Length: 191
Length: 198
Length: 190
Image (cartoon, rainbow over all chains, first blue to last red; front, side):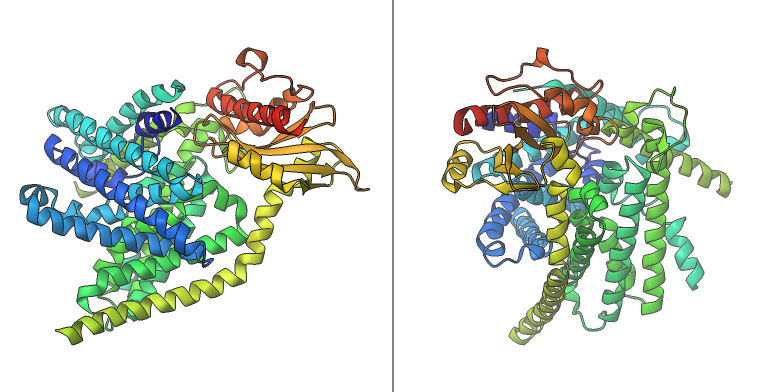
């Protein structure tokens, strides 16, 4: 039951975008169309989950036993970069349409704060393996939720009559802020 | 571009946060107080300038095919250096900035400058670019975190600015406030730059 | 082709090795200072005084086996300590624990001190990630002192304490940590 509560907390209550801000860059960049956003979200779930598993194992089996914890940042980011390369090659072969649509944003998953952030948080919160897995899946599912919701809203925002200065990122951020207020309401959720 | 123009570019025309709009995560998350904003800004200046220096020095030795992984290693190394130094010598700030210190490595601006500038320009120009972009980042952080601290807490750097009677706007120090205030800040910058062009 | 690959891998290896070397050196240089910072964070005299008045040090509890048992059963429990005064006399026990309910921004880390008759002598927050000026108010004596005197006979319910206005989640998180300490004391230490 605790795992379920961990999932719901990382999925909604502590939503990675609206409450923790990790992954804001691609969030603002890719979410223009719902299907691209959904594709991005799913790719991110895959990368975050795999990256978390691998970094978790490497950290506890190699870094800790050799007292090399200070190399954590370098090792983790290299693992993530390699993983994203593989995902890129995989998508190029099996889902070329999605590969094209995601374009530059696919390699940018490497610099997505959410991926490294989740990997590091798994260590900071001292999660057991199964907990880190649930946290990773829940958090990245939260990213998918956020990005798809946002794409839906932005669709409408594009047709609105706005002062020239507010168009683009400014109104996106303000919109995200209003959605964040909605998610703030979930903080009362105690499971 | 001469040195002054390179520096100014980073602060105004191509300001990483207000114009290029990269590296948002830390900007939104830790700007709840001016001290944190300044601390993070300085840390980013250090990592950015350091990695620009090394990458510029090595630019003729790094083969094109492995440039991105090389850049990543250098940037991660500098991030870790700053992390260790802060852990040892600025412990309170280290605790306040938390996970966002190691996250400097994925701050898009650093990799972007390595790729777009430091790998193609001289050492002295790259240093100036690092300092300029870093200064631009710091300026944006100062603007946003001052606004959030004043509105949300009535203080600046811990000193009370607004009278005790001021009912703090809690939203300002919470996530929605971050998004909205940054959006408004960018809107204002857009407005000012459009007026300048007109 | 193969030569090229060796060259590429070689460059990466050199950059990686030099970086690792620099970091290893810096890690060495800073490790003492870092260890000191971490220790002081939880051994600040102000914290010692707030948790167990008159204490100068928290020592690890003698029965390491019991500590391990508690750790195995309770994953929010961090450590069991003995508070001693200047002359080395034992003043009571201290439990170091995480909260069981997340605050606004994560778990709170607390010391909860117990007198020999099992009453709370004091509480103090060791670390937290709550919002400055809002949730962080749970670290203030005005909030933490209300738990002094409560005993380990049962959990404190939400109706029995005063939360910080506007910081409900941080307060609830704090309460959960106190209750976790109460439960551990009642079950293992008494």
